[in-house]
Amino acid sequence: MANILLVANLNCDRILELDKPLQTGGRFHYQDGGQRLGGGGANTGLGLVWAQHRVALVSQVGRDKIGDWLLAEASTQGIDCHLIQRHEESSCEMLLVMTPDGERTIIRPQRPIFELPAPPVWDQWDAVYFNSSAEGSVSWAKTALNHCLVLAQLAKDERLRPCHILIASKTDMLGRSELSNWEYGKSIAGESLKYFIVTDGADGAYLYTQDGCQTVPAVTSDVVDTTGAGDAYASGLIHGLATGLTIIDSMNEGATWAAFAVATASSIPGAALKQYLNG
Image 1: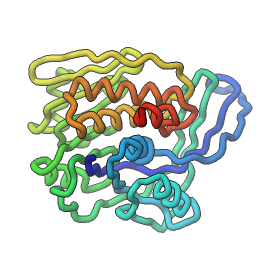
Image 2: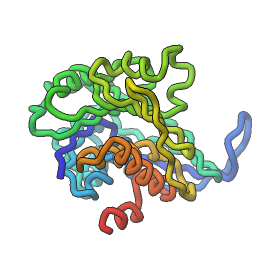
Image 3: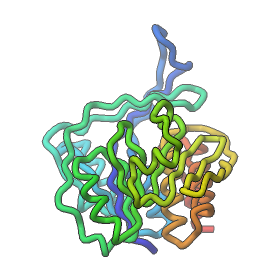
Image 4: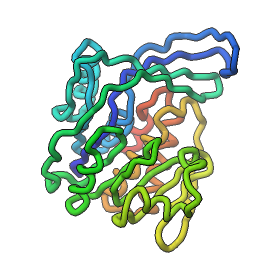
């Protein structure tokens, strides 16, 4: 299978399950759902590990007990963590506030600045996926473009994401630009862009190219927890492309993985995805 490098966060999620939907000025009771492994690095990486790919993660965690726990958990589950850096600040928990309808609000601490070192030798990687605000990501991506497949998640701001495939959600696109979606994607990803994918939850996803737009439907699922659905979509997409599927078939694979993710009470894909991959 493929050698895949992920530049993404590794989080310790703390789940707070509320008794009713959030509203301004309200009072709520919650149940503490405990700690769990999360962040784009885990949510994207574990499915790829289960699909027998070699997955290495570039991230940073604190030099503390939570940081130790994160590295132990990710390593035990098969993610190569030797490129993860340690910083001197605490690895604070990420709070995921869940409402009874499956929606979630994320409350996270301010992260310390993460500076990427010199880029790796790209010829040893088949694909690299950027989903991090790490400084140096643009330089890494530019050096990778001629050596392996480069995918990126649209950032929350207007920072550049040089890549072949750019991924965004429809909500991320609201109010961004008056350009067409394809031209906007090129303004972020550059001339190397081949595909710009915009996901829209239950309404599927849109594939933008220089030739137009195609729609790929979602896979129906009972929603339990929407956390990590976008990460699972990216993971399934990467798996499809790494195994030689067309872009449309890879998007279908991403939709399938996302459906498993939202039907699972965790941010990482659950046992149903494992069974699907082993079937």
